[in-house]
Image (cartoon, rainbow, N blue to C red):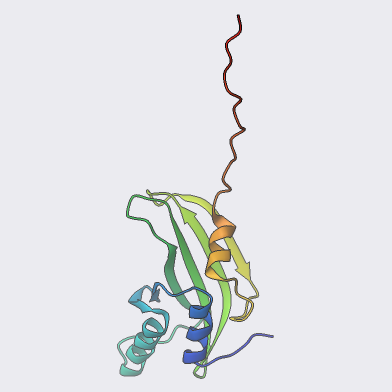
Length: 142
C-alpha cells in the first residue's frame, strides 16, 4: 500500500532520511525538495507548465565532489494525485567524472516510508573498497 502525503509531510520524511540537497522537478525548478516541487506546482497553476500525465521526475545529487570527480545521482519518480504525493520508483547511479555509468541500482514498489536513507542509497552504488593484503616487511637473506 503506497503512502499518500501532502507536500510538507512528503518533503519532511525524505529530508529526514538525508535527501536534503538540491533537486530539479521535471528537469527545471532547482531548489531544496519542497521548494522545487512547490515552484513546479505553482507554475502549473499559473499555466506556465502542465501537470505530467504520469509521474513527476525529481533529479538530484546524493554525493558531489566536483565537476571532474565521481558522483552519485538520484532520480525519483513521484506520483501526484489530488494534492498528495507518493514515491513510486528510485534510481541511484554512480558516475565517473566524465558522466559514464559505473554502477546503478533501481528500486521499485517503494513508498516514502520504505525508501532507503540517502547514506544507504549511496552505499548501494559505491564501489567496495578493496583491501590490500598486508605486505610482510622485506627481509634480507644472506
